[in-house]
Length: 527
Image 1 (tube, helix red, strand yellow):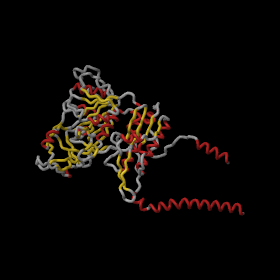
Image 2: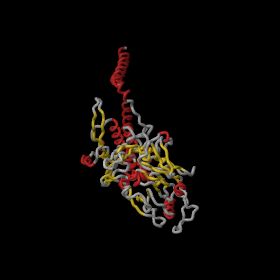
Image 3: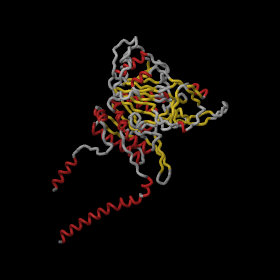
Image 4: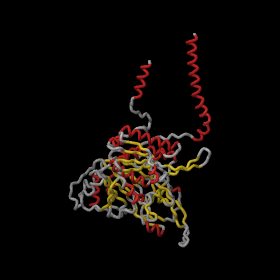
């Protein structure tokens, strides 16, 4: 008998691996993450700064999930090493201030450092472990942080491993957004890519070395040569992000006079986009879910008085939980956006809506006039719902020039069908424009008046990451872990009962088992 017990103990002590039996596979890593980690050929040191200090159960859950994931990565590759926190690193990072209410009703302020520092071959990468979506509760934000945890770590490891920097390019020459306009977006993208800007010229394959081409708000029509170069770039597997305004308006007139005419914008691309499966309609959307804008209401230039009013032409767009680009991304701020529409029927292109208006929206067609002072909201007019403003396209695209003659200066072979590739079309270029304050750039999407950071930067960066993703890594952002919350009120009501049961039940079980054993022994030996 003793020998059998010893054999069982020896077998149990062996490393049989781990089986993730959870419904949401929260303790498993994806094949994409596994492939990245397996390539580590030097120590990867990870410091989890969230360890410092005492946290509530929600942050402890995030902290534990982080350590569990690191342990899982270590089983894949022993080069993953978790190090103790270097306290000098805390001085270089901005803490997150958390306000909580204790059981006795007092407010407690805690400074958290929700970061992890990764070091590989002398290079460092700091990742933030927690998201802050203003539209979600604290529990939802913490749960969303756990959902995207694997993606953030895997993406950082891949970035540290990369020896060749991919290149993306912003097109110029047609009045596109300036470098100053997209400064913050580019600053964030520079963590992943080399960013160039330039005009096309007349070389057919000038774009072939770039992973993504970004066409941001051209104000002049693109020539047939430009369109041909972009079309053939897509036919060779290239990826494009289009940020286009459906109507033209004047910022200067709106600022100075409080009104601006709007007319249909013509970038010369409507036939091209229609051929690829989308259409940007020359309309201006309005939404009751919108920004507050300070408007001067006194009419006295010497003593101006500003009053906040909802500006329906500056909608706060909803993000889709179905796409890895926008999952767990907060509302996106924009202005003077248009509606985008899928066309082409069953053309083999997978089209997903990324951004849309709320359930109380409407739109006006161009030409028309926008008057900043005439913003009376009539709810009965806002009868439209979820008007698409941004859309992703994925599939095999057909060339616009498959049955057309190429431009005279483009005497080259025409590729008529692309391999599987991707595009993103946004019908509201203003969402990419960052504001400046005292000659310093603000994060794109930060509202100076409302003091809120919207999800513009996350959306724009995720969009480019999705376009360049070839191994399915960004799909990890779609990981879903159900949030199972206790009823706090009910829990508080039955707390005493739970405590009593928790204390008495084990004692009762022990007493019962002891009584049974004692009875058996008496019956056996007394008889």
